Amino acid sequence: MKQKFFLIFAAMLSTVLLARQATNAPTPIETPAAAPAATNTTATLTNAPATNAPGKAEKKKAATKKKAEKKAVRKPDPAADLKIAPLVPGPAVVVASNVNVRGQAKLKSEIVTRVNKGQNLNVLEEVRLKNSGPDEPSAWAKILLPPGGHVWVNTSFINASNKTVLPRKLNGRSGAGENYSVIAVLKRGDAVKEVSTKGEWTEIEPPADAYAFVAARYLKQEPGATPELPPVATTVADAQPVVPPTTDTPKPPTDAPAVTNTPAPPTPPTTEPVIEEPPPKRIVQREGVVRGTFSIQAPTHFELVSPQTGRVINYLYTTSVSLDLHEYKGLRIVVTGEEGLDERWRNTPVITIQKIQVIE
Image 1 (cartoon, one colour):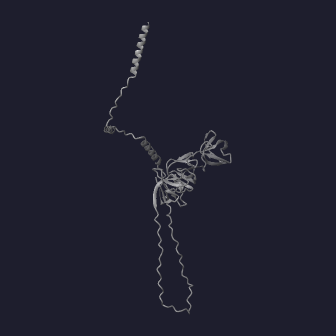
Image 2: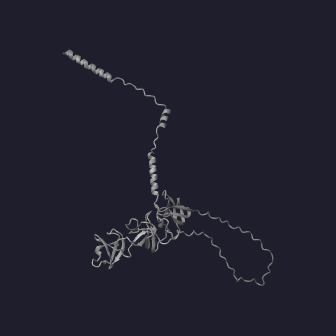
């Protein structure tokens, strides 16, 4: 029995020793393959198929450029070739197609109706905005409400029996609700003609004095040429006053000594001061879009920007009291005038307008 035990123990011990020897066997060292020659590597890189896909930086640059070009391109204004002149009360003609007529003199107001090219309107007055946006028209025409406009009043203020206005003053609005603009004012006793009803509101035939608003740039009252400012007056030196000859010159006394014929001493030549002529004025012609300035430190309130890049070309300045640059905001123009730099703002030149022309 003991002999069997020792035999089993010896077999197990030998098995453990053999397994340990196999585990501790040295790992064979692999010799690294020889690196390929530099010339072959270069050839491999050179012969590799080139990819035509642009890098991320190029894609981003192209997308930014395309976006800037799309933003800079403006849709041609159908009224861009018009003469911009203040409107006066009286008839006017629409010069563009599908022009919006609004309840108030601003772009955010609701559309009351639309008018088309060649349609006649009656201007009541011109309204000018002082704080219009950079691309918002500053000049609006208050007009009599054209055909297609609707006037609504609250039904509770209309006498049901004789269809007359009950309160002393009743607002007529462009829609069935108090959130719509007031475009007519009716007085007590005014008769109204009902057209339709909607809830608490009644649509009536527009009164004769109902009104609305349209951008002044789309109206034309006379086919005059493009306004041209008078040329800048040149400075002329004050002329010396001419003393007229007098007839009261006293005669010499009879007892005065005889005048000899001694020649008078020669008068030394007078040297006139040399007057340096001023440098010629720099008269230039620029084309761009009129925009209001955003910086309060800019030398003027208006600037001329490039329609392609949107960058500022010139600051616009005028000495004429009859030229209102608010009316040109958002329009593409060609301006002629004297160009110079402002001492406080040397980055962009200022052009003093002599002639301005609106183009497409």
